[in-house]
Length: 403
Image (cartoon, rainbow, N blue to C red; front, side):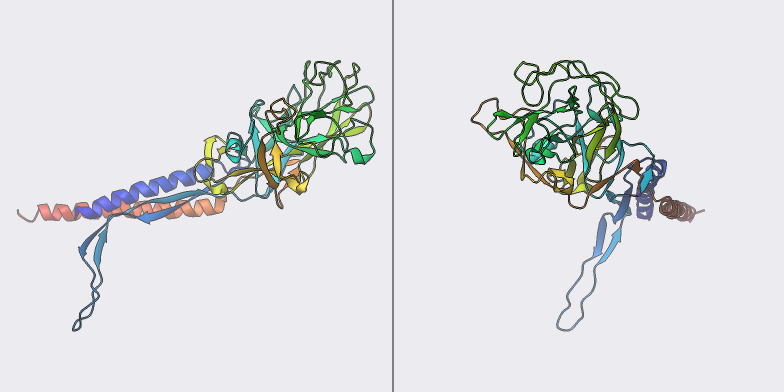
């Protein structure tokens, strides 16, 4: 008789766990990019009072007789599908429509030599972005966003060192950062390394990059616009000041990036106010995961690809980075020698994934569904308490048989 009590206690615990899941979902009904969880129940231990039989030549078979002892939580799964677009009107807010995650981390992470090394980056869906004082693209918690740097397309017919909307993208995963500009409005774009580690700045088949160091820093307002001066002398990686073509260029000047846009392919462009020149800053990379539902929450909205998630890949929206490998050695080419290629990390197309600017992804909580689930769980909890009450009454009758 006490088995009914034990089964009901297990049922109470399980229903309470389910209510915790529901409560967490409802609490985050207005949390942008929140991924709601769902649960399933499973039956608990069975005892067998009679085994089954296939029968004999003269008698038929019998089924087993088993008694269960309640239930427990079978699984708690996240719904990682993309949700509705919620407009904000802020130009650096993006909603990820489709699979994929922003890849964020520290400025110095890398090199990314394998899919396992990419797992050191955190993943998130909330696209509340800004540019910090050093020109790095970050989320609202200060985590640096990784992507593909823009490089000059020699076939575009533009002046050497100019970044424009025809730019190609270096097939290396680096923190996205605003380039510098000289007095002509030309972007002092990154020092680029070829597959053998030698420096060049205009080769369209470049595979890795190292940013020109920011000695003075950039400051940005809440909208992500650069509002402070650019350094008057840039280091081209050799210890000499210079522009994109390697010639000395001490005339890097104060600039203001205005009307920043992020395209559906994750390409970030900005207009230099003084010259009305549009420059390409880079493309946001998408973190593609074999099993998104297998990701593990690490801190708030951040995910990490641990056991069960499979491999992580750097994805390029729109196929802009069509290389089969990402070359990256902590923003340097190879190991600094001319005869060793940089390490290789897989990059793949991001499929139909796109970014929608001026808005964020809404919460994944379906409030009507959660309220319905809450009612069901409440009634299930009440029913289990009734079993305990009835069992207690039956035990009381048993004790009172002898009076």
